[in-house]
Length: 202
Image (tube, rainbow, N blue to C red; front, side, top):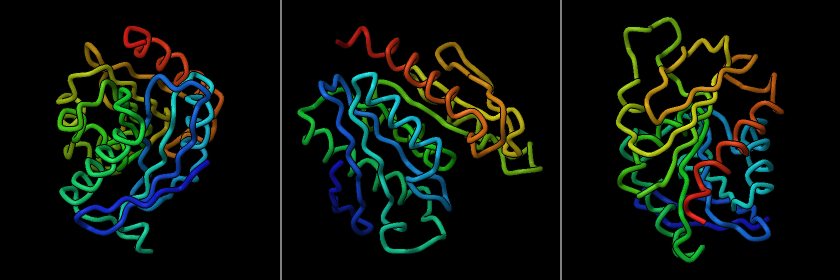
């Protein structure tokens, strides 16, 4: 594992790199609004991706690196994420990039997929709406993604359940927004999906 600091317009971001033996792609994973890159589902996905031959970069947004708990505005999150993606693409010799993350990080991955030329998106615990406010849907962020997308959601997630689409798969597992009740299911869904979406690229 290697840690690198990457300059963005909003301060340094940090990426923790977990390399596969012979990586065919890079999976960038972002954290939730108030959480870090050590959440159990991100750790499980990192291991599953490495075993599937995918390099993983766990990305800490500049506000987290600076020690702040409150998330930055969406515009700053997206711009910082794309700066990190550009840097990592060069480090990994322009391997295909998969964008992903949990909760807020999943939203960033969806919003930036087109601009960052991601080949696929992995959304863990996508917050479909704020708890108790289904009228404030964020489904449009998912629907705008035009590459293969896997959504892994807890069946009792208070942030709701997104709808699947024609190239958006939805896997519902036991548990809530943390996805820690069935980490084996998270790993299995991730590795099976990565193998499928990356096969045409190898």
